[in-house]
Amino acid sequence: MTSRINQSLDDFMGRFAAFVKDHAEAGAIEYDADWPSPCYATDVPPETGKLIPWKPELREQASEFKDLSEALELTLHPDVAQFYSRYWSDNIVAQHPSGKLQILQAWNEEDFERLQQNIVGHILMKRRLRQPETIFIALTDEDDFVLSVDNQTGAVMLEQVGLQPKEQISPDLATFLDEIEPSTTD
Image (cartoon, rainbow, N blue to C red; front, top):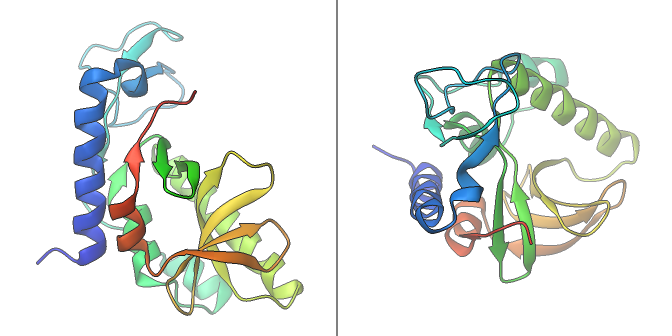
């Protein structure tokens, strides 16, 4: 049985695949032999630096974020855990009624480890500032603003780095994913 968050993420990735058919640049990336990923959509490794197609790839096994949870003595909101461990993917530019954003994802295992380290740093900062614990999921086109999930409620929030969340964008991550559409960077 597919969870609501997985279904919403699958639907968004389907919209992204359809979008790439008309906007090939959204599905192209510079090949980097030192940064492997199952997302490269070619069986023959091209030259480093050459633009090649890529696509999100469903992961064979979801991560449990066990090390992160133990290190922080925190249970990560299940929506966030599913969001970050369902696909291997580059970040994806999207449009929400509240503005343009970039959905964050992990490109490969090394990127996933880096993501977890950044989440740990973010949560430790929130604790030090005595603010509600949030987990970032997207960048906005406003400097120092991110979209995050409130770890207690699951609501998607707009927050300026280092400050309390500013406003609720969506009641939950699945609703947020249903509200966004793939977009171009300009």
